[in-house]
Image 1 (cartoon, helix red, strand yellow):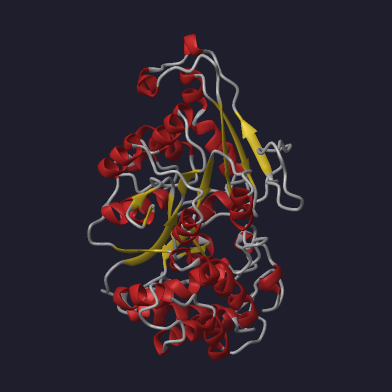
Image 2 (image 1 turned 120 degrees about the vertical axis):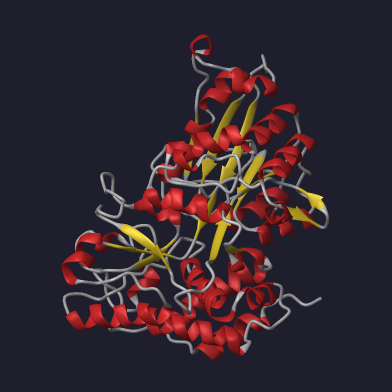
Length: 449
């Protein structure tokens, strides 16, 4: 997931607004360019629309990622004549069901949670994907990825962008200066944390859990990574489908392992405050103290490289780099969590179908990846188009048949849990609730039947 602030002027998407729930945050559209000087060969299949229809898109993608998203369809607009108006807000996922029920949803909504997709489909608000989108999905994605955009045997959306979670960001210069080594196991990560704390210059970890209405989600990523590594993929699957309860002892163990780090006053919150500060620290700048030598480690996904200040060099000899959160054993299988977005449609029409088909293509995926800051699980993406070594590594991880990949657990869970009680539970837990109290409360919120 990514929720970032943006600076653009706002233009409402819907003809009518809902008080307190209108989409706000960022907006953008790219005016049709010079068609005579644009190579339109890759866009001929989408047709030409002489009446310049507008297709509205909403989502949680904001800030520089929104700028890049808008740029990714600039030539498509020029060549097809379709005007795309995008608007993003951190509150999109909290608002979209209300907007859909009132008939004020955008034509296309980019959702990051299969659980939310299912809720919108159950509400009767979504339109099935056209055959052209399904054909692209069958060609360029695995069956697992297609399943994330499917509900009750109806295919609603192709995947869009992706991320690999569980990276730990650090300063290569600091590691070299202090003789720190990349940990090969979770125990070695604990040893490294203890060593940095003992050196006494700063707290080892910097953490931020704030994200508007989605505050808490970075903490769920921590727990999911530990469930997958400690308990294994089968238990992970049972957990997210509620075949085992949320308060199963194996989940308690994962919470406790995470708590040993992020609830430890000796380990957080470097450059930002005490343990309590992680609740109010926005996740976007939470890793920046690494650049100032005020913390050493920050847990976040591949997309986080785009959140460092402009000019930050990302690489093994750069200002920052990252390693994957290790497994229990040094030679353990490569198990990673990740996430993605799914453009669902609330309205139908030829122009809407054309936009959805383009966004499900390898053409779009390569353009967007080349613009920087993200990756895709689209098999047609050339890893060399990635804007950094970390992102190239992320594409290769997703494409590697030896990788054990699991989608973000909270995104797969019912919305009442994954984007409500789990997020809120993380905040209550960090703020003082015990692990058992936290998992019991989340378990009690799981929908019955």
